[in-house]
Length: 230
Image (tube, rainbow, N blue to C red):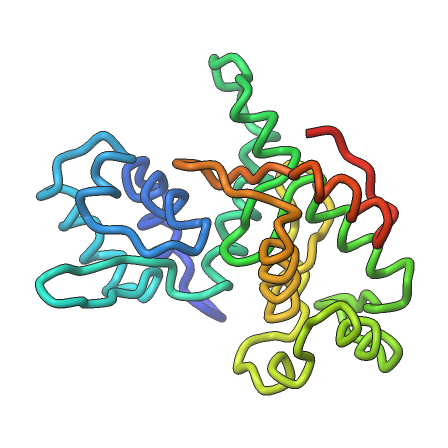
């Protein structure tokens, strides 16, 4: 007898190469059309539509309608966490006969993971918040401290809005490239939004990778003690 959630169906859906590629394309939190996702996975729009219907039925993705158009995005942060964790397993598997390129290095330095930061920058920010007592680490999640609430408010983050969010305040998401947790949840999204609004980072078109701007290099060092190349 199988006890607990039945994982085989979800695993089979994610395990298809085309569907896995489309899910990965949605990892930056954007809503994409079937045509865009078909192009990303190298299949026809008709085939992509069939895959997307199955993913939507399993509630792995959400569908948004605007007029005659449909846009697809990951259903929630839990799906993103599963994909990030699978990437951790993948890097320990059989080697892929593909040379590491500049895009891989950029992704490892700094990238979006759904709606929060990952890579060296995401982990470094998480460690800086831990060291400053803004958050503490529990077995299942991070937690904002009372002193941390004041620090975050001073930084420009609306902690009250985080408290009212229906999602986890500060979830732990295992980073596939750094192999250690980075900050997710409502706080992770707020931190990404704040440093992006300050022009500390800039997004790279067609990629989840983000670049640290010259201003960002200065301010990340001054505010968080973070110094990264790139």
